[in-house]
Amino acid sequence: MKVVAISKKYLLVLCCMASLQLTAQKTYFDVLINLVPGNFHYGEANDDLKDFKKNLNGLQAGVSLRAGVTPNLSLVSEFYFLIKGGRLTEGNPLTDLPTKTRLYTLELPALARVHLGKFYFNAGPSVAYNLAGKQIFEETESTPKESYKLLFDGSEGSYNRWDAGVQIGVGYEFKLKKAHLALDLRYSHGLVNVANDMEKRNRYLNFNVLISKPWKTNPLAKK
Image 1: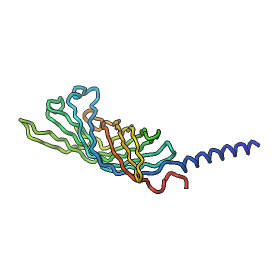
Image 2: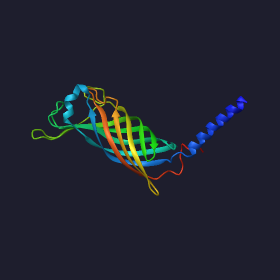
Image 3: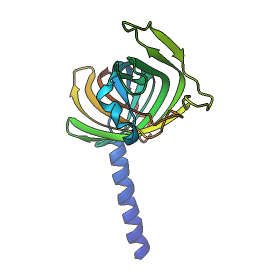
Image 4: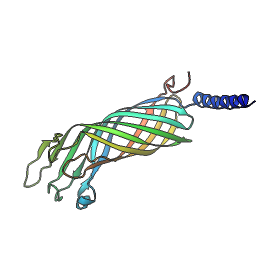
């Protein structure tokens, strides 16, 4: 009798899992092209730079894949090229000149997305690799414009190749006749110091408008 009871419980669990998979959300593939405003966080030791910080607008270009797991849960994976960095205005204590620092990166976030009606919340880790970089000193009345390539060799004043952080965000979805539209707002919080001479952690806020058609098959649904 105990064996029969246990078997019934397992059968009920399997039926529930199968039901969730059969009613899982659809899978969507999106192209990402956007301008992303970001900046560096310089830490408490460099708090005097706070009043001189300005956002640096960087290009984001890549792809996004969302695979439904259950009616209220999906997994989002993205891969894109992104220009990160920051700006400092003239008179700042670090360079005294209006300065732009650009990092050309490849980034890969992996997010869990919880759906509540048409609203959703997502969060997860991200990892990035810095391909190259440039520091630009803007022209002033007394100095010409100059630019230098950033080094990634471990020397003083150089930068680190690898970066990592967490992303959190919210969104709202519209279901159209033959497509899917989503408004996605996301904040990225860098956890790694990308500079070797002082604290610099990437921060950026990203807003995307995504229009896509669902795939005919869901790779996470039960076959």
